[in-house]
Picture 1 (cartoon, rainbow, N blue to C red):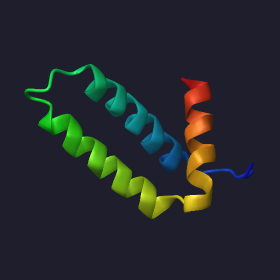
Picture 2: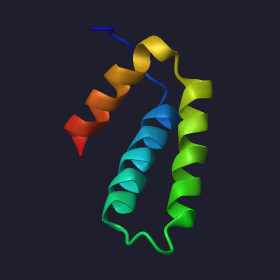
Picture 3: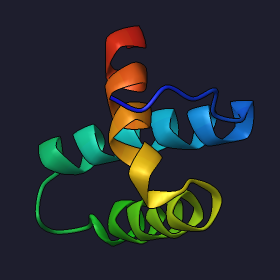
Picture 4: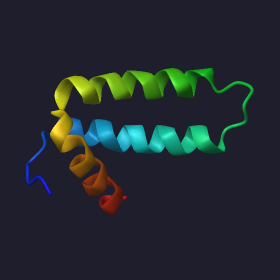
Length: 66
């Protein structure tokens, strides 16, 4: 496991990603375009801000804190 201290902004972005993903999973197929676009935007931010080797650890940390 990679031990790191992600930036607070990255942690918040991952939490937002988790919430958006869960909302999209529960949303009806019609009218979920805004959620899909938000999820894509958050994914892009995470890819830019967090090294690939640390993404899984960040996801685990934010899931544990939810």
